Length: 226
Image 1 (cartoon, rainbow, N blue to C red):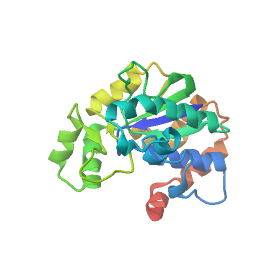
Image 2: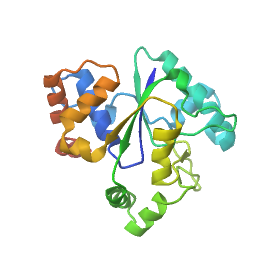
Image 3: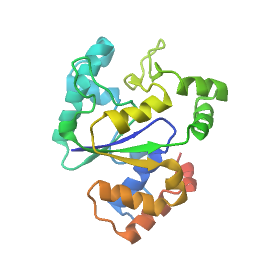
């Protein structure tokens, strides 16, 4: 089964994956930020091309979207345990009416919500453009990442829409079990909020292990690895 780690970009998704990886592995050193559990992002072309057997670059967007739920079923079927998959797409349906992230292989979704004012600053810094341009993206109902721009992206097109539409799609429209995590709450009390996520995922909560995972996933540690 799959637990989707869903968020608008720059909302703490990588941090959450680091927390989970450090907790599940319970190692003696921080997990490598470049080898976190769950593999690539759910929009990875590598996974799509491998399971479909046809390169996404040869297919129209409508067909790609229709095939993606089947790819996730294959991934879930091959996994020996729960998959924790990062995803930035808004939740939605294919033109056949099927959920892009199929409920039959979904254990739940953790949705990370960050104040859009802070998010806009982080998105502008990440993309290297002005705050005004970042705000335009967050308010664009057609906003998508990895659109073709004369070169082949390593990710499939991800439709995000506006910040509010993205949140609404996962929290109100998906019909999936969703656990809401506010980024600001995670910053304020990481141990308590992370423990709540573990319970949602059906995992046993070990307070000392939670404390170690939070320490191993501290921002200064992640920054050094990046």
